[in-house]
Image 1 (spheres, rainbow, N blue to C red):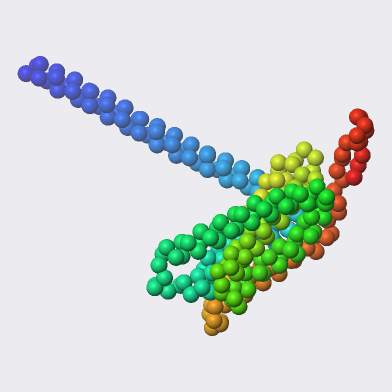
Image 2 (cartoon, rainbow, N blue to C red):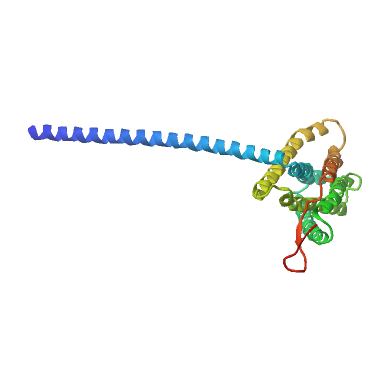
Length: 274
């Protein structure tokens, strides 16, 4: 009996010790996890606010950078809208919206659009590189903005001529309209404050992201509003409208002054400011 009592006492002590350890560990882990989560969340929120405020402050400190961000937003909104809209617009004009059309036919048309867009983007980017050897980035930007507006409006021709070759040309036009971003981004280091090129590029990228969000909002709100007007196949209206939005970036680009670029002369040690 004494041995049994001793065994029971030892077992109770072990149970108490293990229970206390488990409770202590669970309490410590829970409190540690909660406190760590709270600290990380608060620090990330604070860092996000500081980053956002810093980007806004940098853009408003440099008026030229703010204008570049405005141009980037105005040409990026149509890009988001039209690329999201292009397949539906093509299917609608080619009569491929019904159940009778197979999935393979739609996939083939989509693949043709994507391929034509990529090829045109490749050729357009190379052409912009060649033109940049003769023109400055700002001059090239001023010429490309109205060309971009015309190219973004061209797919509306599908409504008048729903042919396969028009669909391919429309995809090519949309691909070429993107090349306006190349000289625009090349101007960011020239208009950024000294030693803050990385922040300026981040601010420039943020403006394009905000423009993409605005483009998605236009799709969500604008397409149902246009379709509720009762017009037959009314999506073509968005193409000239987006071209007009891109054209609004031209007055902003015209007020930008040519950046001062330091180039080396043929003689070593001499510099020439252009």
